[in-house]
Image (cartoon, rainbow, N blue to C red; front, side):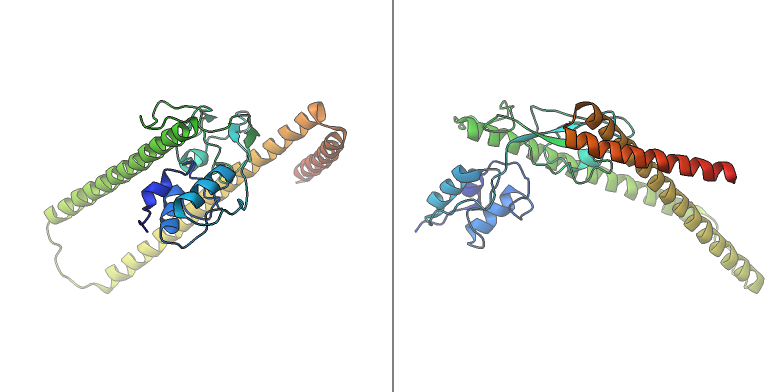
Length: 283
């Protein structure tokens, strides 16, 4: 029997890099299949079609998919987004645009619906909306010339975007390491140019240096704690704002049960705000 290589298997996968199969991407799953370490029914994005193709390629019995993932596109509620860039870092195909402290938006034609951007969002402003598309992403212009079917064109385009994303991250990491090395070399060069201090032992100087070091460490700890507390406070406020926005939306457009739930939350929220205001006035 001719051995099946991982790249042959990888060509059958949808290239969403969603990790629903339990592996860190499509290629790692393909490598595990090539080595006989896993089953052919784990690709939820590919569903029954991919499960059947994998079984045929590997010459094994067909197994129904453990899970079938519906086609969805990510959407960011820009009125709630705080611009933290967590979703941008999580997207494997660079389908999210934005900058730090500015609202982000999803490039719908490039989104593969992997859902990896949802969990990192600290204010829960990313939603997955069902779409009627049979295959994602919608863009196809980066597809391989041999990919004639729509399914393989979509996968080829997504794979090209993922490869570009991986290369960009490697390039950014290399540039960051080069800058750090450059700064360290410059610091070392300056230290070497300084005249060597006279080696006179002074217990008083040693005590002063130790106290100065301890004071600097204490100051650093206080500054770190203050930064962490400020960030937690900002995130908590943003989460509260997001919840309030969703409650008001449900009050206007939701079902009867959603309106009742939203009304209960808004009453509790109002009571809590009045309590906090009373405590502030009393102090």
